Length: 232
Image 1 (cartoon, rainbow, N blue to C red):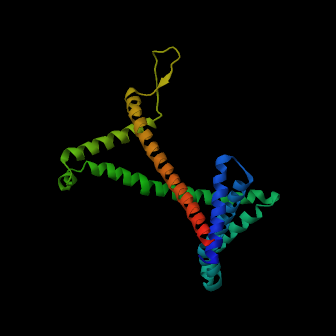
Image 2: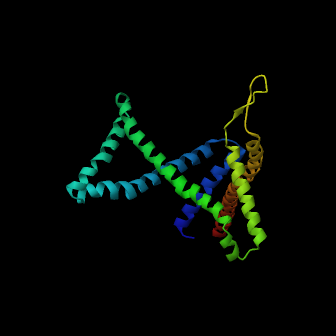
Image 3: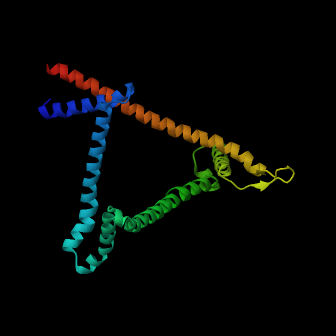
């Protein structure tokens, strides 16, 4: 190993030990490692922002593009200026304009992404399960295709029923308590099972990812110690 590999390996070893020291309680070494991680991440994101967004889409057009394009850049420049001067206490209200624009734009993009990226594909997946032509083309047995479709349909109806909050009054009770229709209440119980299975699988995947990361760090520590003793 050359000197650069020794330096990077030692830095990684020390940071790994500092992070793992949180297992014995909160301490100054863990806080130092967390601060280093946050600082490096912030610096890396700042470099990416400048290199891939500000430079190609703002600075370069201001330098090389014709004046017609530069006029359109006045809008983002104005929003940036309002956001910067909002750091002063007397100008804080001006910062609401770019923040409102950013929140509205982010919300619109999130809604479009959820509809066209999640809702519609999942709806089409449920519909395609009951396509009889696909059943004949599939290599799986017919009963298996029908069973998968039935389970998927029951799961979708159950989950939608679980999030159904419509209620009707029960006039037979003295306090006129409100309750959901019985059919939605029954399907909601089924939906809880599917939601529990989904959340359990998500938690298991997150736990397995964290466990693999921990194993990788422990293996890195062991490998570094072995290389250290071999160097001596």
